[in-house]
Amino acid sequence: MRRGSAAGAAWLAGLLAATLALPVHAGPTGEPEPELRALLAKNIGAADSFEHRFDAEVWLVDMSARLQRFMPDAGQRLELLRLVHSEARRAKLAPELVLAVIEVESGFNRYAVSSAGAQGLMQIMPFWLKEIGKPDDNLFHARTNLRMGCTILKFYLDKERGNLIGALGRYNGSYGKPDYPMLVVNALNRRWYRS
Figure 1: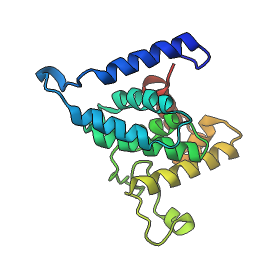
Figure 2: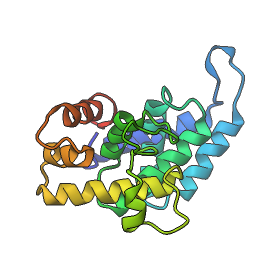
Figure 3: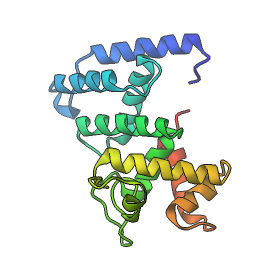
Figure 4: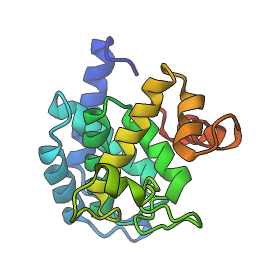
């Protein structure tokens, strides 16, 4: 849905309000989960990278459902999504692109380490800590990893003048080879892109 449709936005706002007003249930057991509603309200309130509260509600609810298969814990999902949105916007990247990169790079495992030694959600090489980090930075810390990863990805996107395939190849160290960029683009289109 595009922002230009006032009727569509009103319908979506009504649907979201009705959804948040209903008891939240855990799967087939039907047991209410008021703590999930409280977590959602807390994370929406703390999401400072959105222009409007409504935008935060819609994006967090939508992306939380998409992320659930990777992260079953609702609190962890919402906290990560808030951080991803904040750091992506800070670097002037689409948060959905960052989610696709994380899916391919680490499968949302913040403690992932590659065979080459890359660490964390966005698989940052430790030498970056010496280049742009602070002495107490930790690549397994989500905000640090996202800030470095988003900054590096944006640098390569600018260097490639917006060419996503080239930027992703540079980010992964596989410039000129289509495999990695296509994995990210496919993840973006399949799971994270909002139509």
